[in-house]
Length: 491
Image 1 (cartoon, rainbow, N blue to C red):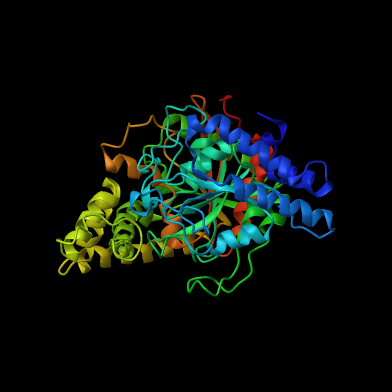
Image 2: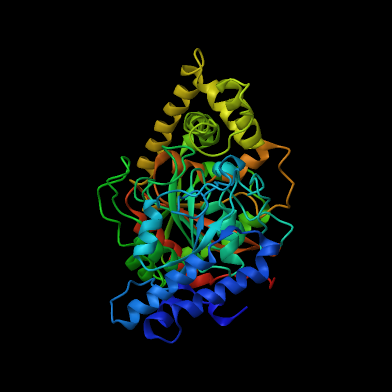
């Protein structure tokens, strides 16, 4: 790989700002890297070569004119294919939107452009963000650069794999039940889910509207914080957007990098202790806890009794919202249209279109959600799940009265082999066991590499109160300063 592709986003931005390298040179190096390795990784669904180089030339021209540029100007970024990009295909990993070119940019993409980043293209994902391995993509699975016979996590495995393969220094993901953090953990990268409403959902193709949260992916905590600061903040076009400034996550990451956690109280969730995490994951997590203690943090055991019900509650709430959101894909308004031969009714065309356009996991979740919302079952299933969600929120509230943040393994196991869990949906769902509670609560969470198990990366998760995203960045950066970053074998 070329030197520039191995650099952090912060280092690349410094090169561009000083003129030591042009944005075009940086962009071309990453495009060359994609051409060289993505055939083995399948991180990208679409590479926007012309658009990326045009954006890079614009950055170089603005710099030459003496314009003041942002801290990420000229840095390439990969965008999960769940966010609309004007004129650039947005498929959500599904055949039902194959070839669709949106007429507008999502707010996140608008802000990336305003920050001067260079969008390389759209990354692979589980169809409609439903999955934990990227194996449910209609365009084939992405592969983990640590071992290309293993999964890179999901649903945003393409973004995480692009980072680990040095195809991009920054990426955007979306997190509904762990889809940023879990891929970060199994690829040895950093993935952060902001506070719900702290990043805009305008232009995000909806899966579960009360849970979906766009967020940053990077190879270092500081890079993730810089990207978070660039994309976050209030958006009047999103009714769930919080009218409050983004916490100073960049300053928090820099403070954490000093390695001092004196006065910080961290809680370990008792209920996560018996959930069957692999021994190697538990060992790496325990070593990381010892490291945090040496950095000055006080460790407290915290009971969150309703966390054990998070997984079943999530798999009632999220499919219910998905069954409503995906009703718009009807073969009439946009996307795929199948069976319209002039002899079939609208209902027949709609049925044939959905049969051809949706994959098995999407169909499974639509059916689960429709059943949970149906007459006679709403109160017994969906209504009860929402009550559990309230209890989980109360657990978080009580915990944060005692500690500044909670920590846990990000996922119970390291990257598993491709095909190992696709025949057992429940085993696949367990990948998000430790990440789902934060989504139900709405608070921020981050995964940072904390060690290796059998040569594969393990992630530590930091969960913070709503609107206290800065706390998780401080803790994550402190751990990173002590254990370093992790580099996969060369592809």
